[in-house]
Image (tube, rainbow, N blue to C red; front, side, top):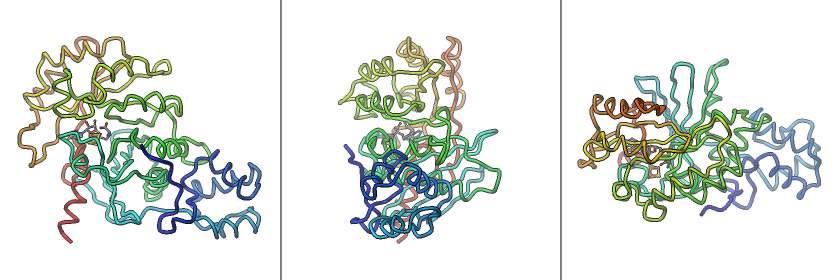
Length: 361
Ligand code: SAH
Ligand code: SF4
């Protein structure tokens, strides 16, 4: 599991001020310098609302504090290496990290929403057979700063009056495998003195790391999405190796026990593979499995990858027929439209650009 990483990129003996949430920053500043909460709040707002990186530029902060911070700390930023625009309006940001690794964030405009899909790890350890990020293996966890800087820096590129409305933790990586750094990052996203997103508009998607689900719920009031992708244990084991550690039954029990605020539901993501999990029997079994869980289902037609010839995308008619079974039994269901396929920004394609870039070098 991850440990909290407070090191400043490129200067590991110094502390990255953007790796703390508000309470964490105050605790650290109080211990280092004995400052009061008012002063640490000013520093926190400089970091997240004013985008100030250099402690010397902090206003209404005592000089001895500024000088100490400049010596022992700093504030990191991501470096945007490429920004790619899709014909459908989706925009992909490829960030180069200080150690040469790359991560991606994808901005998806949709009617009245502007959603940012964020990464939480370089690569991913979970090895789902259909996902290109999984092919990379886990290279490393992102720091809290590297997670929370994605919305801050993408927002800064947008014209005045345009705001990111929703955050989804569905990019590269398994968010709950990096819970230690995810929690302070999301706390910054939620904080009205920082990025100020509503908890109703942040969704964490997980492969089903069962013990971490309750920990997430205890730490933060965000929405949960679970990548189910199957209707039998055997099916799920074939495409999602995590099922060997936590069975689907155990996962669904954890969903049943998940402390949902009233009116909230768990989203079940269901990637559809032709002839594998897209039969009408699967649809009926899915309804059965989700009985008793306040749920909605998000059907995701599989985005094909040339090196997975055995996995195929169902036709639109097949997806609709599956959806019809769910809807006819009152299940709230949506179909995720494929976005950004031309810039390798669609679900399961992140990491591809990285491989392409590496090949081009
Ligand atoms: N690790 C987390 C979040 C990132 S993956 C998780 O697995 O939930 C985000 C979503 O993309 C998951 O629901 C996953 O099942 C889906 N996905 C992965 N590869 C895909 C592909 N090739 N086509 C369609 N969806 C895919
Ligand atoms: Fe990791 Fe999610 Fe991809 Fe599975 S689908 S390999 S958990 S990023």
